[in-house]
Image (cartoon, rainbow, N blue to C red; front, side, top):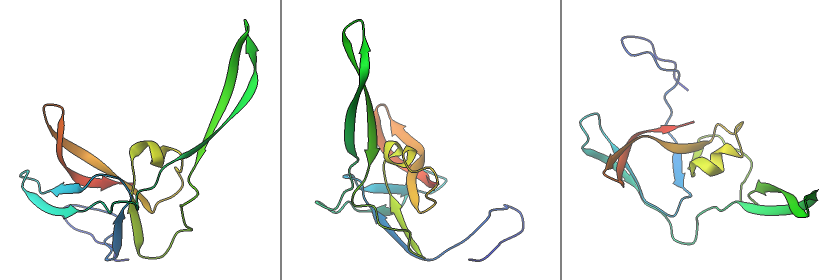
Length: 120
């Protein structure tokens, strides 16, 4: 890790492996909206959240359940490896800094064009 100082302060700069675990290619745009990089999706290699629902009780005769989510494919963190996942996936693993989500998303109407960054 290299700490950088100067005009635009940021916390780190790494070289490493970024694996896309979503079913969609991820298009990274530069500040002018031009495609900088495309990180392809690997068919059959996407991660999904497994869900386990348990009955908690009843309200007025209606079942009340609790659903917990996890991913059986999620490995332990590895030095120099990051994974692009969906925002919903990341919400279930808030302490994992190796999970990245598309951030600063650009849209054309309802169609996602790309993103300016990957968020931790």
